[in-house]
Image (cartoon, rainbow, N blue to C red):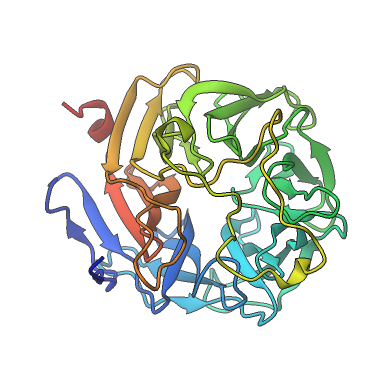
Length: 394
């Protein structure tokens, strides 16, 4: 395949194919860039964080961020926010707490093994201009703790951080088949946390909690089985959850994200595909890199007669959906990017990956939908559209 380069200058442009879209590729000097998360500040600045380096799972992966200042037409140069030479630092997210303290949270794993992951954080009291020391937020010696989605602040002041637990079968390397979800709840502004397990959540990860207009909670999940997006609900502030059940929307064992709009609608960004669209599969996410943390463990195998994590389902198209009834139906869906979504390799150095994945979506102060996602694992693509862009796709 002929190698190509993207214009990662961060400059905003109208889409060459659709004048109703604004697009940009965020500035980066990394070979691989993945897992974006957006946050808009009250002054109108928009922040985006992601991880970059050589390849996911390798210890040169760090958290980065860029800023689109209010009124600017160009994203700022990327700034590195973490740099542990012994761990791959992934899935960063920003959280602006009620006291206007900006938090960066991210995972840190040894080599290519998610069951060694811990959650770290650092804080900024000047909206990201300077940062405090790196500290550990969550860790468990028996399993990896991963994050992906934002913290939700409840009306009573509780903070809800969705997590998922990366669990390996004894004596085997992690492959994702035994992962479950939980919610960490803090009543003291992040000083201490209590875990609430999501019942029967095997294979349901990347829990995305949404607070609906009636203050009930609606959560959606990525599926390790690459079959459907799953959903769960809570009516007691997140202390108990219903068993996750499959929605009508497909999932390909890749990340999703949704947000509640000012009018109460839910906007969801996801890959409109599943394992049904796959011609090949991988056993592991990290089958291309050396896993030094599991030298005495056997390679895990796909086991007949049980559910197994499905890796390699195409990560395309990248689609935007709207629900007007709290997630019961999704009548409006439109593609943001289309392609074959090839992801049997995570190799960005040789342009072997062609996925659109790991989206983030926020409604801005301007009412528009601000979206960021991985483009071929080479760059973070930023897109701005109106809700009407989805609903009037004809």
